[in-house]
Length: 72
Image (cartoon, rainbow, N blue to C red; front, side):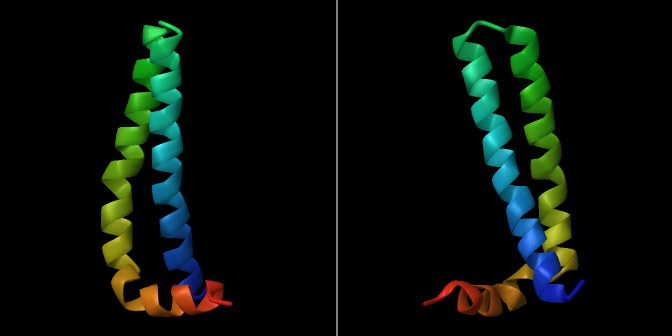
């Protein structure tokens, strides 16, 4: 796996944190409090590990190559 692919995986992991937070919000709307807290714990876990992973794989440096991959 190249460093660019690893950086992209970190970005995708960060995006899943937003998905888990949305699932927590949906559980709260349905008044499923236990499920809401489970989703919040998962979202906090993802939020806690994506920063160190971003620094480890130097996402800031590979950001330019990632945007070049998606430009048309």
